[in-house]
Image (cartoon, rainbow, N blue to C red; front, side, top):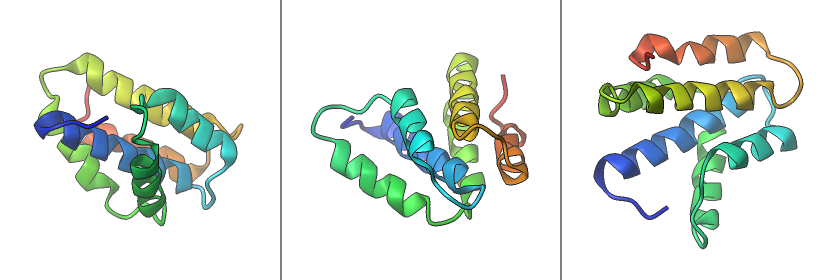
Length: 116
């Protein structure tokens, strides 16, 4: 997962958005963490850094708009990537068996130029 430039920005933004989706209902469950791990490919040896970033970002949902805009801007020419991001966020939101109202609001990141 050592990436540079656009790829690094995408990876960091995706991790942060995923963490903020997981905490949107007030608690991050083990099933949400498993869903995150299933949707993000993490290179061997990078797990501690990813876990650290995820844990920082899951403190609250504040700032998710910034990450959504960044992903939308970097990948406006790649609708399949943006669709994957939305699918991943929805997968994380539903991982605990229900979709909370706050997760529904957060899933509207499409309004921040993540469009398919």
